[in-house]
Length: 95
Image (tube, rainbow, N blue to C red):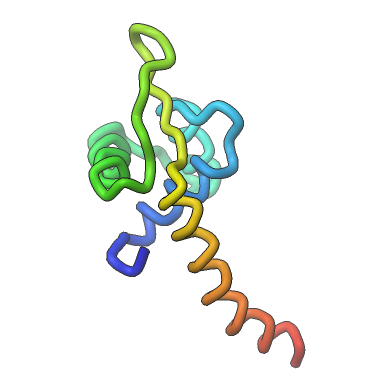
């Protein structure tokens, strides 16, 4: 996960947290977090990067909508990142 941008990591976390992660739902979640519009030209190329890296699978929900599903590798990457972050966050919280 070290080679992902912050935006790509955020995409991965949103996909992991949604029940039915499709493009529009992912876009809406990120717009709420970033408090600004996320353009399709930013969203979909970054989703494709996650697919190409094997972190997410892209499938068809219906004729017009793609769904994005976390792979095992994607889950492992999130778990490893969470453990890495926890060592610093736990120290901060303990102060």
